Image 1 (cartoon, rainbow, N blue to C red):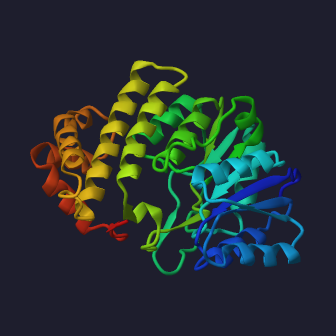
Image 2 (cartoon, rainbow, N blue to C red):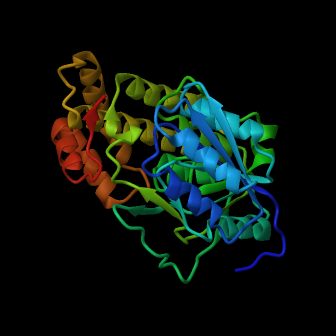
Length: 334
């Protein structure tokens, strides 16, 4: 797939103590078949060799810009990237993930051909060890409204994180969309929904061109922090307050997402054996998950998700135990 149009694309990677995988991640960006790109590496006050590794890459490739900052969190580092970006489209990449060589080429093709503001796929390639080759030879491409796309994300049918997408930088700038620096959990979800809510057209393909690492025990998603749980809950309130069109179907989807977030937080507490450390928070999560499990009954979700809701209704602790048993990335205390 070769494009006639080659607009500049900005790729943002926030780095914090990620020297284990950062070389592989950076190389996956530099080895794109689409070459008209800039790579913005934001060193968020790393204590390891992330910053020096980035500097060495920048010496060899003029497309790389490195920014060394004091530690302020993932939201702040990504916002610096958005402020410095100059491409027509922008993509967010996690420091331990890998891009398929066709990642940018594929998404730019979708954006340009279908005149959309956001290009994505419902799910990435999740890998533990080695990445999988793209098996979606026969692609299925559809264009949706931003509101429909928001619903799909709120029902957790599409990946909720800011990565695995290319987004119009004009859309972000025109609507003053930023990562909320007050959030240290759920910030990516809030950013994604806000972008989708302002997008007239979202184009969705099926090729899995983003490789998401699920086996890193050092990932922030694997660690229990009380602040992260509170942030995730507050991020859901932020999403509710920033919905552009609060119709019944969107509010119904948000109710499911809010309940799902509480359940994820409960899973984290139980998986980290933190119930006795924060008994009031544990009790709050437990009761909400159980009392609001009814949101799954009429939701357009899979049978597996409905069974999950039924189990949380009967016994939230047992539900979390079952879910955590099959989880590849185990939880740990901070």
